[in-house]
Amino acid sequence: MPKTLIIGAGFSGLSSATILASKGHDVSLFEKNDTTGGRCRSWEHNGFLFDMGPSWYWMPDVFERYFNLFDKSVNDYYTLKRLSPSYRVFFENNVRMDIPANLDGIYALFEAHEKGSANKLKQFLASAEYKYNKGMKELVFKPGRSLTEFMQWSVVSSLFKIHLFSPISKEIRKNFKNPHLQQLLEFPVLFLGAKPENTPALYSLMNYADMVLGTWYPMGGMCKITEAMTKLAKEKGVHIHLNTGIESFNISGRQIESINSQTKTFAADGVIAAADYHHVESTFLNGHANYTDAYWNKRKLAPSSLIFYVGVSKKIKNLLHHNLFFDADFAKHAAAIYDKPEWPQSPLFYVCAPSVTDDTVAPPGCENLFILIPVSTDIDETDAIKEHYFNLVIDRIEKQTGDTFKNEILFKKSFAKKEFIREYNSFKGNAYGLANTLRQTAILKPKVYNKKINNLFYAGQLTVPGPGVPPSLISGEIAAKQLMNYLRN
Image 1 (tube, rainbow, N blue to C red):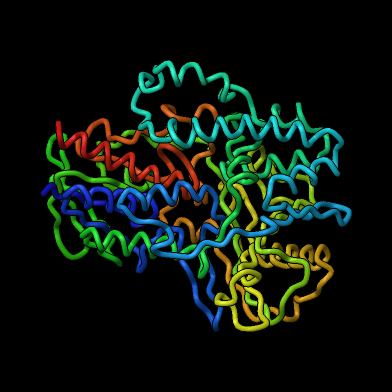
Image 2 (image 1 turned 90 degrees about the vertical axis):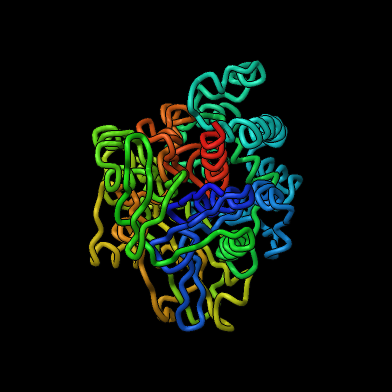
């Protein structure tokens, strides 16, 4: 049995480990923290249960496909609920949009705000469906080792049809003139970590995921996913070592022969680094790294985040499960992230209130709030700054919902750049990996393999296919297949 070592027990690490174990590998999975799941962790406090990281469940087909690899189904592990409405958007001047969970409702919503836009949306989503099928069922599974992967006629012939070389903002603004509809269609690319004008129109596939495939919630919280993945990994024989950081690699020639943890040395036939790519390269490889610091410092990163976990002793009116507060100038906030890094004066932000859907995540009559402000990785927070932004967003929520609750706040906890670095060794404290710009797509991302060490491969949001939970599942599969191909040859 090949001895395979996986570093990092997030989505990609669990994915790699389980796939390899199911193929007969002796797999050891190392996690420096006390739980699996990576950024998908939970925090319990006084009867409240908070998802600390991912909170949107999109692309349910990707999760189902993952469990199907092992003749399992999502339903074997957790219960999904489709949210209806999918989410609420708060704009300026007390304008609200609830996004229906069915297409006819979405078409009616668009038509009510801009005459003729329903037919344009149908055409836009038809194109987005093609991109989703081409992108999520074909392109994302390519390891990005060389351009020849993309030279099949089926791929070459689709490159212009998927609008890889034009920005998504151009496609949206060509078809829709209402600024609220434009923002609604551009918002999903915020998960990709770049401004719409710098994101390839290929990623309108996110609009298909949003409006057609829908927004879902695993009852009990997002950590039900990683609990399921961990259970499955153990069923397949993966040895999981928690609270076990890696101290060093033992490298001989072009091979990692073994890895040293705090407690013992583990022999290795192959290694997958599913921890932060930059951290692994800069900490353990001693001259065997793929990339220099100069290379990493030139990468365009997705934002970091200032997050608050808040327990409230009352139910808050007019909040849905997912809420986007777009009642400020998006261009100014984006400039503060990407152009001239600084703390935004009036940020856009996101509020998740899972207690609207799930009464197990808060005590009766209480609300569980997860509040996220995207911010630049090139700024630092202080306690005073965090307090300022906490009061700012609470005031905005109260104004937009028409409900006061500041005096009903039982507690709050923050998580920001310093915690991303400390807890996850996150490069510059980013929350979502590399920005999905054209120059950081496919073969232009950091390589899935190490160029100097034959048996070392990488998984996670800093390599292919990119940021997000579904891509991380796929990244783990790509790395596992690359390692198996190496060992076979």
